Length: 509
View 1 (cartoon, rainbow, N blue to C red):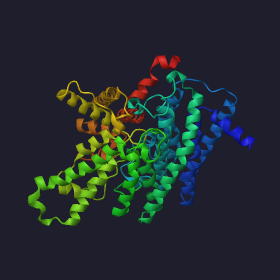
View 2: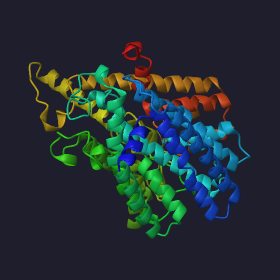
View 3: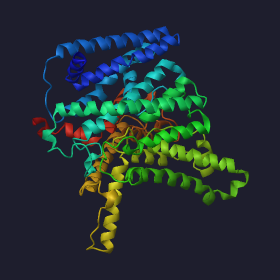
View 4: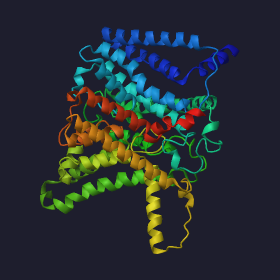
């Protein structure tokens, strides 16, 4: 027993990036085993040898690093998180390019980076080009990226007041500490360990439940597993390359699990321990549900405003299909998952909007909840700006009025709206910069807008439905792909975290 605890202690003393590297290398044995069972021996060998080489490398570096005291620093865990998103896709791309020798390593890296950041944009518009093991690997890498964000949100970003926690006032991890300078690598490791022990079984359990439910609807085991991992990670990766299978029941099941991306309170209370009322008073969940209900009703009601003279052929069934198609798709893009309902065509014909790409891009920009796998600006920041706007209008009518925060508003600090506005401006500047860089590379302006929003909001499927026609990413230049890769990392970590990494004063601490 003492030996096991000693080994566990030695592992926790290794650098965080090395631990993530070891976990990623060991996970390659999963697609290796699946390819072996599916009689795809060459693919199985590619993943097996890559996983074996990575595991041996991890063990050798771990042995060489044994006995060294971990370095202290406020931004050490954040730098490890940044390094994971930039460099781990290189390791993930090795078995990918070995199993698919018809592509370049550069394209394989882009594919793995897109999956690991839960963006889900793919260079391979023809899903039949990739074998089943490669589809499983893409979904698995995205699933691991989602788990990393679940853990990093509470253990790394929250103590540094990043990732949306900068607008909060109470009940968040790290608020009781004296500041950034008191946060050490040791305390971060303890938080990461506790968060991993708590969240990993929950994350895996929910994925298994969703997999089982989707399998019952009639989907194949591989498709159901890829959809289950993609929904939990909001990566939008599928093995079929089309609308989710399982019919209406399958989409209802997936929609229920997409609600986990609207608020962290849906699966844990580790960041809101002092909030009263639970989901009933959670501003993120309430705003998210409001958007999910309001936008489909607007699309549904537009039929009666602009196309009522064509409703002679419409039936109750087509109306219900149109309403559900819009509801599922709106929830999917608000959570930055990006799956399109099989009934979306009914919604388009009912509303009269051939390609409502602006609506989908707006939903992706808003994004999901703080400390979830969703991207975008985040609902809590939107709520902070909304509260500030309401208060300013009240002061126009009653200049000397004094307003109370209330139970819901107590989660925001006094300057939360100002900080949220700063983030929104940084996001807008990032969006403008990425769009300009893409246009300089010869990408049309419309496509550059869609690509910028898709990458910064980590909603890769926008490239297929956001514009008038799907954008073929493989046709882009290598420089344009590099710009998109940087935008994906920026969108996943957010601009404030990147700026924190460039702050000299924090590094001197």
